[in-house]
Image (cartoon, rainbow, N blue to C red; front, side, top):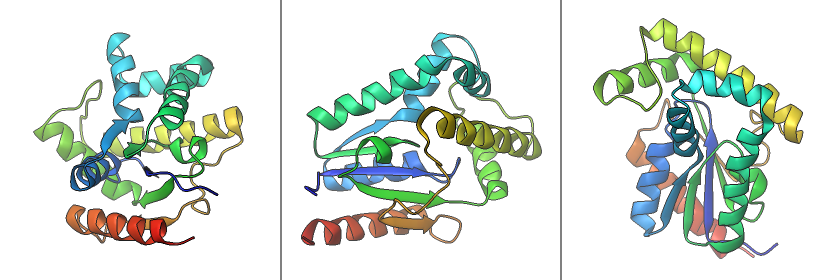
Length: 189
């Protein structure tokens, strides 16, 4: 297997995929791409919430296919790339694959705080409990959708080179763990 200079970062909702990917890209001088940002932008274009977008994606496979096609194009044409995405690891088999794990209750608190402090495109939050309910629903919907569309269980951690629990590691530590593990992976045959 020829290794590619691409790191794919998947994981639980709210686990820090985007923050980690941006920081790793900055440290390595790589480009960054976020499937979540693309998905949220599509939701904004349609003037709907991320949750509603997920419900639509359950009925309209072309939404996921559009995002997936973008990932496949990146894989075919790019290197020196960090991608945060639920499925990029699946479409990019020769990438270094990272999974960020996080308890849903901690994720809900993080998401709520982020929405309150900075806002989030096409996403609102009435309370931490409301975010937890929406997060669990979204997580189950995505799991079922990707299993149905591609036969992929996005909660299975087996395909990943590195799994990190972000509830016990801060962003700087997670970034360093990813970079160190990626460099070690690159050096192995």
